[in-house]
Length: 323
Image: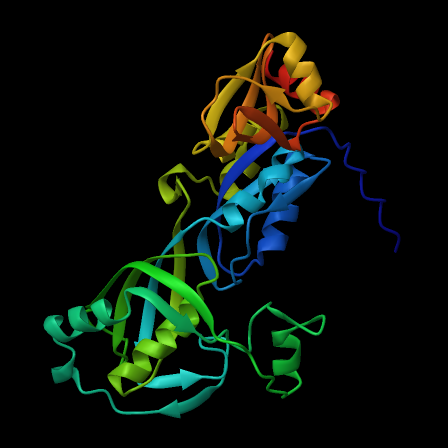
């Protein structure tokens, strides 16, 4: 039996950001490739991975937006997680094998104790990266060593837990004797919520692992702004680009500088410009006519120093898509 050859997707220049509500079961890259295919985009990247078991805010960058994706790798993240008490697993979540079990004393899980525990874990803390993570050691991801049964030495990392709350979830019918806590956290980049869950379980004396994880925020992007893969799939091909936010939404917290036509051309060629601007570490630079994003810069002593720049072709394509 022969099968018909699959139709080749006609790629096109696509510039902007899709705020995706990543579904459970897909890796971040699988979700990215799916949306890239739906948009028929030439170039794409994401702003930091979410585990396949995790859902929620995943900004996807297309075209010129990929030049600024690092900004959101460094952004604070917000999560809602469910911690299952009384058991630890090899991976710190539901994917791993149970490695220990301890009876949970419900009487100890009072609101006052949970509040005190949340306060204890708020602020700058040290965290040991888990073996089941994508962190590299000698060119290999830690999870590759873990799957081979090898434990390697890791250095603790300093992170910041900006906000943290814990509450006991009501037991539901059919749940058996499983006891779970809801955790809500706002944290700095590099935080492993699985490790935080394990550390809280250790502090409670009963162990814990993640049974659910949902990212609710990354930088200024929130879950309410996100779109699902199913929603994009349901659109006609001609409508799918409406799911894109402009490239400069990644630069919302930057200072803004606008240049006239002559200075814009020189800035785009990599030349520094002088002007009456206050010092600023993060600047988004625009041309006044036609109104267009040129790239990022910093200002030192009245000098505008180019950073990541869009190409003239990218700028032209963005202007054409807007018209």
